[in-house]
Structures are given as C-alpha cells and as structure tokens.
Image (cartoon, rainbow, N blue to C red; front, side, top):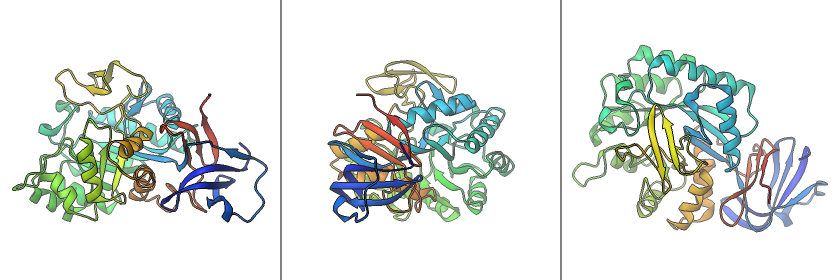
Length: 389
C-alpha cells in the first residue's frame, strides 16, 4: 500500500456499525473514520473496497504464549518474528509476549530477547510489552504450569526480572495469597505494572486485600482461580464485585461456557472485559501433539490438554474470540470488537493511540469477512497480511 489510501466498506467505529463507511490513512495514521458521506475532502488515489465483511480496529492480545509452532519461551528472535507474522493472519496488530512458569535462569534470557526484538521491530503484529505469567503462582491452581518451577515472589527476584524487561513489563500474573506477595504487588504497582490476580486460591477477603495493595486485573477469569459460591465469592466474585477493575476472558466456549461468557460481559461490560487467546504453539496448526514448557500437550477437537486432562492454554485466535462472543453469547459486534481492541489497549495504557478507528489513532486495522476470518491486516498503515483468494 502507498503512504495514503482509503478503505471503503462496513466499519466498526464510534461504538457502532456503519454500513457505508470509510477509513482514510496517511503516513501510518488514521485521518478519518466514519460515514463515507461525511468525508468532504478528495479521496486518495487508492481506495480499497473491502466487500461484505467489516473493517475493524486491529486486535490487541494481552495474553498469548505462542502460535504456529513457536512460543515466547523459545527465547529467540526467530520465534518472535514467526509469532508476529502468524498473529497478523488473525487480525492481531499488537501483543504482549507472555511467559510461563520456568526457572529464573530460563526466564531471564527470554525477557532480554523480547526487549531486544521489540526495539528492532517486527514484520507483523508488534510486541508492546511483556506479560509475566508465573512463576509466582499457587501450586494448587497451577493449571498447565510446572509445579517444580513455582517460586515465592521475593522482592529481590521481582525487581531483578523487572529490570531485565527494560521497561516492557506491562502485566504480572501473581497469586496474591502467597507469602510475600502483597509486598511484591505494592512494589510493582509503584513501577506502573498492571498486577493481575491469577492461578490463585485466594479467598474473597484475600483478593480484596490484594486489590488494596495494587491488584487491578484478573487473569483468564474463571480459569485457575477460586470460583464463585454464594457463601464464599472467591476470586471470581472479586473480579465481578470490583467494578472498576478489568478481567480477561478466553472466549473459546471451552474454557468458559457461552452462557457464563455472556454473564461476565453483562457484569463487567465491554469496557472492563478483555478478550485474550492464551494461545500456545499449537494454535493455527491443528490436531497433534505439542510441547508447552517441557510438557506434552495433545490437541483434539479444538482443545489443548495435558495427559491428565488439564486444559493447557488454547488454540484460540482473537478473530474467532470476537466471532464466538457474537454467535455463542449474543454480544453486539461493536462491543465484541471493542473487547479485543480498545479495551485491552486501554488497560495497557495505549487507549489514546490504539484500538479504535478514529482520527489520530495508529492505522492498526483488521478487515474481517462475514465469517470472522481475516482478509487483511494493517500495522501502522502498512499492509502486513492479505489473504490470497
């Protein structure tokens, strides 16, 4: 694509679906997005008609481990590049490279690799930060994380990993009931890190104490945490009760029942509910046997599981998560798109630049067809993916 062009078709902008819409891009920035009839200037020479699908803001995946045979924990520039390219095929324009529980000697070079690659830039979706999921979790709620590598969140270790991330540590998942966790939470909050309660056995009271200390987010709500009970609300109850806090949802219809997906959406609203993939390296590859942190994962019938039946991340992509919210849970398309774009961007502090089709925003754009498959993806105005028909 040239430096200046326009996309014409149905668009998701201004919180609504616009049937005859127009997005005008110049030098990597959106200069107009709205009803085509409202654009008074001459159109650019290049106008792309997008067909019967939808022009959407690019998706922001704040919790993804891998895709297309690669994983953040591989710790190589080549793997991050492959992840970046693969994510663009599914409409993702920005992501947090997410780690998992591992020995510190393995985590440290992974963080350094992400920091180095982010400075150099990628060819597809861009790394905008790191999500550290583990090792500071509860062994009883470890999910597919290796128990022998779980550690207590001692402040010295927390500070060490924060420094190695070179300013890119955006989210840290932690079990707030673990010894020394509250001190670590308070320190991370002071650094501007989003502390997320996850892989946790906390009670409702312990979760409330953690919120007072600095927790402001919840990792893949309902999964790997204490559930909602009418006499003990648990961490799920805390995520629902604290209206100003945000939470993640793996909207594959497997991790959470579609009816419960809708309940969570109604409680949190699209402003506080971020769709995430939590994808592992098997995503985009189909059925088979794969590795996750040294553990064998079997993918069958769209489910990734360890040998004991534990769900091991997902093979979900965000375009499909958007589609599931619409088709399985009855969420209006503009709000489903918001939960995959502007909501995560806002949680991460990028809400004034990313996640919306609006003048002044980065030209990060995903074009979906009527089946929620991705036809084109643009990052900073550059066409990084175009489906061959």
